[in-house]
Amino acid sequence: MPIGLQVEGQIPLAPLTTFGIGGAARYFAVAETERQVAEGVAWAEERGLRLFILGGGSNLLVRDEGFDGLVLKMGVMGVEACGDGCFEVGAGEVWDVFVEMAVGQGMAGVECLAGIPGSVGGTPVQNVGAYGQEVSETIEWVRAFDRRSKDWVRLDKAECRFRYRQSVFNSDEPERYIVTRVRFRLRPGGRPNLRYADLERRLGGREELSLAAVAATVREIRREKGMLLVEGDADCRSAGSFFKNPVVGLEHLAAVAAGAGVQPEAVPSWPAGMGQIKIPAAWLLERAGFVKGFGDGPAGISTRHTLALTNRGGAMCADIERLQAQIVAGVKDRFGITLEREPVLLG
Image 1 (cartoon, rainbow, N blue to C red):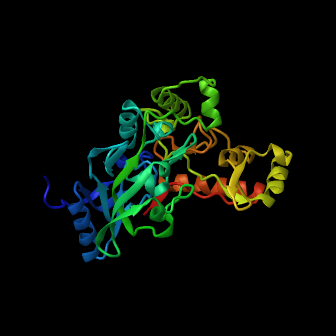
Image 2: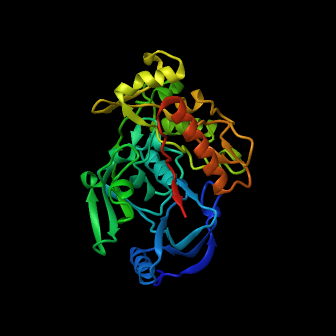
């Protein structure tokens, strides 16, 4: 087992991201044990350096100048079956490999999250969700290093404060916790989740669907949208959905409808609690003129998914940011809604 943390200098970060964009890390190391995670924190603090924890690089946009600090790549591995549908999984494990294993063992709860790139440790941070499921529905607790107390903690579901694409890890106390292990409680022999309309339509309302059939269909849909990592596919050089679905007050619905030239009932939305609604960001983009394939430079909108900004080849972070600014300004001008970026910007 590795003993000490091995720190290297000037390691390119672009190859470690799905975007394929960005400069180098001033310092870089892989933490394969929890001890090395703590060592990495101490090493950076002793030198007054910023610290960034890198998972699968699937929700990340790195600035062209790189990162002037220590990038600690999460490499804590291992999957332990604990009985009664529970699994304790290292943060460095590939998420989709865990999903495939769970589905193969007849464990329901994550089948609609198939095909999502990235590592297990990143899923609670963003409360990853897709096709009617959120990872928070299956998480029992998260083990993490608390950079404030310099101690290891176990946060239960309530303490993680999960919301739509948010958690204590990325919103309430960002950079405080470093996730190293996650415990999931799945449903042995459970039925697949079919709460998402697009998925239901694709499966044709068939009864007695297997978890494997649902997971395979989700991967098929993701591939069609360019949201499944496929070697050589330019639409896959992205960070997935670049904008969050905005949550606005119900009173804003009339203005959105007017901006789109439709009746309020024609605006797709769903309740978000406390007099608020969530509107699909893709719908707003398309009606503001930002359609699939938009853009004529190295950065553009995917030809298959309106929400994915892509690196068509040779794109710089500056190219993506210019396109982002153009889209945000266009949507705000048309609907009065300011879109928020979903990927983390590092640099």
